[in-house]
Image (tube, rainbow, N blue to C red; front, side, top):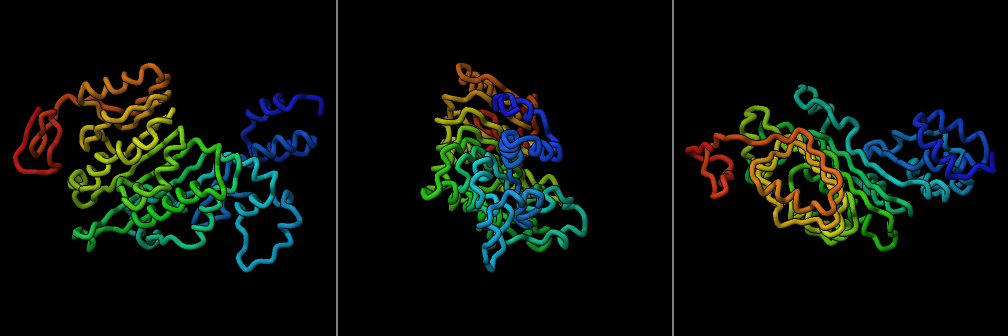
Length: 356
């Protein structure tokens, strides 16, 4: 069996998805054990509120004696234990951070506020996130926030009745700032990093994040950007959700903040939103072009103008895959407010109305 090329083993193991089966395969031979271990530890998923959840203690025999003899007041998480074993940290290709133990908790339940109080970014979370750059072969970093979100500006008067989100805007921003800082740390370069995935990204841009040198440096390196955007939903008056400033400010700024910095190097772009976007709220990315784009995936994106199709066609020389998930074509509107010369809403909510 040792004479079989490693490439053949890798093709066989590629089809094995059951973790228990993979662990058993490690017992077949030493050469197979090395290859299977690479797959078993290729992906790390960490809950920031419970760093050891999602790992299997059965892998502890892989730890070195040096790790076992460490005497520290702060216990190591499983992620840190992997880092201390050279063979294992070399195997890690992707790391995912999950900020909530229940990302899709029903915020309509009366018990939500009690079971999911607002989280605060702490030193333990920082310690876990900053370790993402310790994996020399890292290609993918993902963050999954809680789906429910709220945002209160200084002038906002809704605080007396608004249910606070578990993942507050401040908490989300702190997580992302630490992530980008770590990925841009010159002491621990991640030369193989290609993919950044942000699930349930809140539609609020923070200048301290989007304007930082770390943010810009990381975006200029990646070739695959994946975003699922969540927006605040006003339960008491659902129609008011569409007039909240972040709903429109974020998508107006999306091309310049998130897309322009990585435009020259992106080969794959995925943007989904839990609500329709593109026309209302307006997202105009005519000034952004991706010269290397091969795959474009949009979810809940509204088509309303010819320029949107022209923009996609402008990438025809490189584009190989186009996925449109639940993307409606706008046939007519009734808007409470004035429209500009292209029939976009000038003010989200205003007196009067126009029909087109």
